[in-house]
Length: 203
Image (cartoon, rainbow, N blue to C red; front, side, top):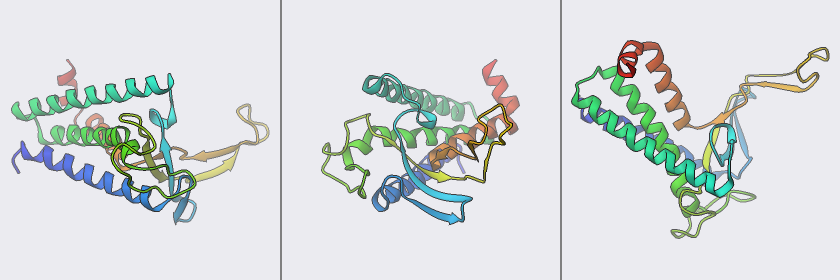
């Protein structure tokens, strides 16, 4: 396949999968509702991320505008960088990895930019599409939909532990989405299999 078309295909495919999953979750589940897929090891748990990774927030509404604006700038810069990679005929694996990261970042931006304007709230009811601009929030103030939860190990810290004695311990605790997975996989691939090319790009 032509290197110019490959990134477009990858981005469109990942965005489509990510948004189909998120829209299904939004229109079929209430906030906090969960479906046990593989016992207590793999759970579809509907939550919404109102800030950065792991729900971190800062400076309220202004901070959210700053974060969303930063995402837009970062995605624009990454898109231009990907365009330059194709023009320079860089290794296909490197182009694929950058495309995957770009798609993941764009997927979460769509939630922040649009979901607050096209959905009503998921709190205490299953969200529905609403007329443009009449949703639960405004432009760039939407929340990112997360759903994949893998609490593989659930135990308690021993009473003698100096760190949170007797408190519950869960591994893996974070709840994430398909776009997050794309970003993580793309970055790991760059670091593990495209290290030389990445190093050359950073030098």
